[in-house]
Image (cartoon, rainbow, N blue to C red; front, top):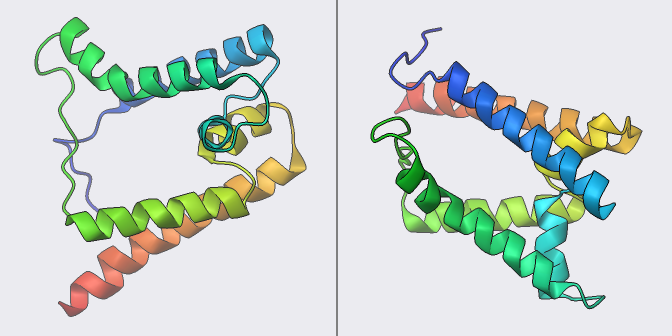
Length: 149
């Protein structure tokens, strides 16, 4: 196994994880709600209460954060990720992720960050499932499919 040292960013990853954890903790303390992006999006697409405003503000902030980051952070600190896939593949991946979050009653932020911190057994099973399957897919693509090409 080799490490791609050009794209290995442990400090940025640690910082991002700390920010996500702090944001999740603040969100649940202030609003009494779990910070799960798929649940927030679902509340915009199928509103059940009159809380669409904060949900839209959250999603717009999520979408605008890379742009704000480029304005506030030093040039070259963070590079855009390289995605080696065409649009239909990315669209299919997005649909599969959407199906998975709906089927699993939550996304990685809801289960992996908030659910595990609340010691939820369902979140533990969900997190182990999507992490394990993610590892398996990467292994199959990199060690089985690419070796045959």
